Length: 255
Image (cartoon, rainbow, N blue to C red; front, top):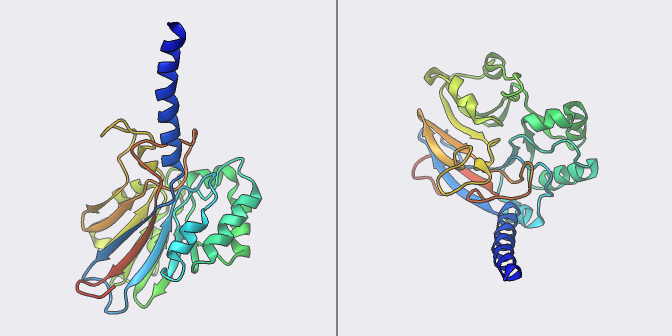
């Protein structure tokens, strides 16, 4: 009798664990079209955004799904964490660099892993590291990358320094809380973030953090991604792993 009870309890637990493991290792590219009449009258801009890779190896299916379709790749922080082998980090950088020019903003776990060594590794693959700085993606389209907020390294004044007020501004910030210090006069159009893993393990609508999603934050098209990897146990529930192909264009433009 006791053995039957134990078996009856173990099997559902094992099945739940397997399901959560599969959710953590999904390879999904979510495609979103962001329309905004502030976007310059030019061809649509396609961005591949991936955050919170941590210990995962980016799957070839992700690369093949976006290769030839993205104009730029944005790594939204936590490319790695402490204990990840350098060979794996290098392979992830190599794979992502095969898609399009790569831009990187640091996350808290990148600092824990050793930001100096990581920055040197990124430089060898011509990855642009944005730490409270910016890059021009197209005429009048600027990508602003923050240093990590939770490490106390974000500097808004440096981030916006010499950026034209009228430019179409896309901010990449590992920590979504950066949105709280953006003012309407900053005229930010898009904010891309991760960090929270969507709560990673949720019980229905409840989780430590909100589930990843797009939302309107005071006129800003804001993405908080569930991210690609996990922290702690490689398990997810109700916040499956995801990456993003984002096309930005004017209303009525053909994508």
